Amino acid sequence: MVAHARADHPDEACGVIAGPAATAEPRRHIPMVNAERSTTFYRFDSAEQLAVWNAMDDADEAPVVIYHSHTATEAYPSRTDVKYAGEPEAHYVLISTRDPHVAEVRSFRIVDGEITEEPVEGLGEAGQADEGHRGDAYAVQSYKFGHTPDAIIYDC
Amino acid sequence: MSIQVRIPTILRQHTQGQKLVEGAGATLDDLFADLDSRHSGLRERVVTAEGGLHRFVNVYVNDEDVRFTGGLKTELSDGDSVTILPAVAGG
Image (cartoon, rainbow over all chains, first blue to last red; front, side, top):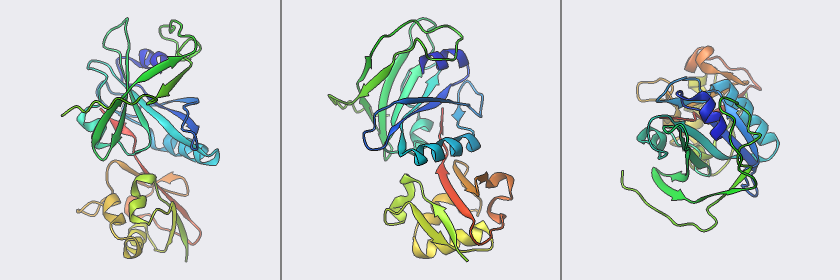
């Protein structure tokens, strides 16, 4: 995800990590096209979204993680992020690429307009992401979510 | 005439939790009116007060985004399948 965000910076990057609907384990990383190609907005291409959602449905998968990057602001859901959060089961991951050397990665549940932050834990080897390389060969292998939930409610 | 309509998680509160419902209509507009008669509240999540499609809801007929097929005027045939997906977007 971070490699994808770096590659698309300063445009916002966006994508999904699919996983089995039964266990909600994030397994299959699917970088998506940002149809807006904007530094301040993202939107999945509607045809690509249907193809991905159909494939997940066929494989009994769900969009466990829906991620996108903020290229100049913090890794926190904006008002539009909350407004358009249409998958109540998903973990919304924000990545900020405002600092060229340190990526902020934070995860949130957004349900009925309410944001709840959750801890992110990197498992496996975390290597250096190759600048400009879209693949995730060196990215953190997987994340665990919410295993010790500490709800931090921000008023916004 | 029977059209299968796939309902996303976020709209299943209007369809008693069902992810697949059936409806009929010569056009998409007619179909949503028909669905709303049995699944109250579903139509207004997809169609605005002005009678257009919500900007951040994607509707597909046979896997084609209806923005390219005439929006709510898209004509339907028996056996067509309609999918509704909330757009994934933000800032």
